[in-house]
Image 1 (cartoon, helix red, strand yellow):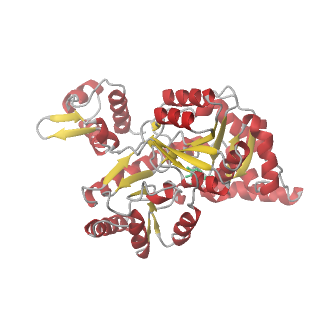
Image 2 (cartoon, helix red, strand yellow):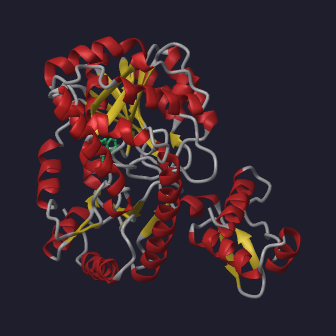
Image 3 (tube, helix red, strand yellow):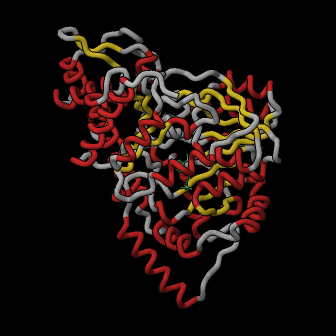
Length: 474
Ligand SMILES: Cc1ncc(COP(=O)(O)O)c(C=O)c1O
């Protein structure tokens, strides 16, 4: 993290903890330069970054002031609870993902980070080494729970965060999606109620539809995560069997839950005997210096099934994820054996080989930094290009931006028009069982800022102007 980012983070923390409150004037640039020993340029960049994120506002000739809290998130809370006895979203998601599956598109709708940020050469070397070894040893199918070396490496990464997870409770899966699906399947029967976020990662909604479950969507805030009062209400009103949520870098909002909320959430679930499927695929893409602890870190009762992945951080196409499943490990292994048999052995071995080189943390460090920088550039460009009536939400960590068009607009209409011009976005309808987010969309800000990205953002801006002018839309 560069010096200006460190300073911005310090100030953000001070605003969050109430050192500086709404309307307070921050120390002047000159004063901060004197106190911190940083250059004027560094301090100015930090203040500008905070301003771009909505934390502070500059007033000409007066200085910088803490912005109202709502502006810092720019977020309009959805209704606290939205129950859905049937979820019917697969057909829509399939049509959107299929239509946008064209390598020629500017993939602003993609859920994956720009592939050029991954260590392709090192992974290729690991794959070749493993291929030679496998050639000598046979085809090497690994039955559940998966490759022992890889499970040990994952357990070591938990241990580095002070978490005691045995390799025996880890099951390697085909991406986190399989881990999440198997976890939900292990915890529920058709007709059960499941708590999800609002808005939610569409994979959760698809799984609920597939397993014929009922969903109660609980309002989720980019800064605080799931609204815990609303969750308490949901747990009182519905016989909930499981909760599926993201503790870090929520998809699509981007934000992460504070530690205190994680603990309260777990206590609430424990009170009602509800298990948690913790989707933590972006957990390594946190902002700041220290990795946040997943909810699983406070779990003493084996209530949390923690699902992770290498898809967003290292090797998208390898399709390797895992679940730290605690006492559900055996059930999940049996379910996996019945469905996909096992995860691809060469890919597991190649990742185990790569992780043994101890390069992963260095790669993650660079990746986090690059993603934050790119997101910041996209954010600024969008603010410049898009009409003022479009709200852009910027959360720290990951690489998503969440945007809200004026309420009368339909982001699915924007999706189809943009697609005709070779640009994809992720329309808000993908993230809820109802029409709640039809005017919203998610953008992937991990792409390099080059003429292609710039043209795409400017073209999107023009399409948005057209759509706003078209008036109420069905
Ligand atoms: C929030 C979330 N969870 C899970 C997944 C699936 O991860 P994987 O690619 O490892 O299956 C995705 C992929 O987009 C995601 O965004």
